[in-house]
Structures are given as C-alpha cells and as structure tokens.
Amino acid sequence: MQQHTLAAEITQTGVGLHSGVSTHVRILPAYVGSGRYFVRVDLPDLPIIPAQVTAVSQTVLSTQLGKGEVCVRTVEHLLAALVGMGVDNARIEIDGPEVPLLDGSAMLWTDSIAQVGLVSQPVTSDKVPLAIQQPLWVYQGDAFACALPAPETRFSYGIDFELSAIGNQWHSWSLTGDLENTSASFAASIAPARTFGLLHQIEYLQQSGLIKGGSLDNALICGNEGWLNPPLRFANEPVRHKILDLVGDLSLLGTFPLAHFIMYKASHNLHIQLAQKILDSI
Image 1 (tube, helix red, strand yellow):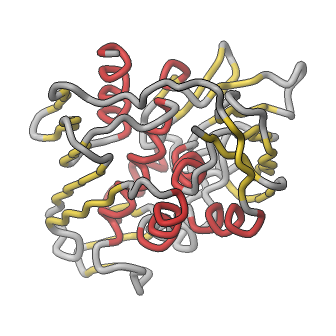
Image 2: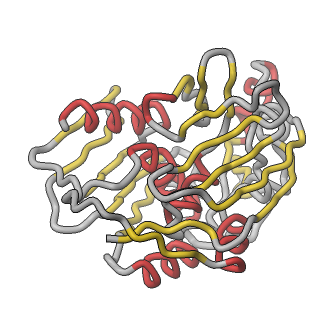
C-alpha cells in the first residue's frame, strides 16, 4: 500500500466566504501517516487542528473544524481538492479563521496540486480498507444522507429547488481505483463546480453575519429570472458542487469506505452526521 503527499508546497491567498477576512494558505508535504491537518500560524504556539470528523465544531452553511477555542472554517473545498487529487498527508498552514473561497470552486486548488505533483509514501500497514456492511442513514424531513454497501466508492446527489433555473438535478461520481484516473476525473468534472446561492436569501444571510465575503465573482446567484452571473461551467453545476462539498466533508473520515453514498437535499450537517454514524459503526 502507498500514501501520497505533495512534491512541493503550494500557496493561495483570498477572502473567506463568511468572515470576509483575507487569509494566506500554505500547504506543505507531510510525513506518512500524519493525515491532513491545519495549523493556525497566526496564533501563539501554532495550534494544530486535525481534519477529522471528531474536530467538527459547526456546520452552518460550511464545515468548521475546531480544537478548544481555535477554529478554521469553510474547509470543505480545499479538503475535497486534496483527497480528490490523492493527497493523503498535508500540513495546511493558515493565518486566519477561514479558508479562502477563491472562485467558489476547488479548481484553483486542484490546478495547484497538479502543478507540483505528488510523492509516493510506502506504508507498512496491511490494513484492509473499511467497507460498509449494512445500510446507514440519517435524515431531516425529506432530506437524507445514506451509505450503502457497494463494490466501489461512489457519490450520488440529488437537489430540488423551486427556482426553474435549478429545479431537480442528480449527478453521480465514483472513485476509479486508479489514482491518476480518479484525479483527472475529479479535476475535470467536480472541482470546477462553484458554490451557489439564492437571490432571495442573500439579505437575510448578510443580516445574520454570514457571506460577508460573497460576491458575483465567487458564487453563482440564482433568482426568479434565472442566473445573475452566467454562464455555468456545467448544465448541472449546482448539484456537482454539492458532490464537491460531500467529498470534502467525508474526507474527514481519513479514507473513504467502500460504499455508495447517496444524498438528497442534504446539508453539511447531514454529511457530518452520516460520517459520525460511520465512525460509530466501525
């Protein structure tokens, strides 16, 4: 078995979606077995926050990790890019409370990872990958998240909005079992999908102290008359972005179990509830 880390460091700077604060991120190679973890380099003692389900401290419109009073928010796009491109071990240094939104997708992260490449790290452990043995699910109203036994790891997602420009959409993406093919597929079909919002909700979210860093440059906005900032990168870009979020959230398990993950109208909260249920079932 092998793990992988970055062949060289990568950096990005940008504004956080909810905080509106500009932060600088530096991602460095990490030792085999260390996993993906954040380091708040702006704080005394350089506190470390592991990218693990047990570190999730909030799931309101993004996923936040925390350790004590220290946190880092909106980690899902970056983590999805790392796991989607095959990076098992990475030290993520950040000088603020929120990962930059960049263009609203994971494309800049995946491009940066592809540019520096990966290094293989031999693993001595012969642990067999976890496989889901029986259906697991969580739900809230008509929204649900479930994991079913399957011969491959697949992510399927459905969304349904009254706005006709979005409507009902489904999409499915799977790991191929081959790192190179999986990375290429993720970078081409999932990573470019941008976050999206509904025009009628923006004022309320802003009054609630959220989306301070949101703009037409980093989020697709949809209203009754259609998209305010077309063109879309995919006809079903919104649901592809939901798979991006899901991959990032479930990456907090460390590695993906063999399972078919099926979501309908789900949220970061349901993603994390399902991940916790998977942990509890091990």
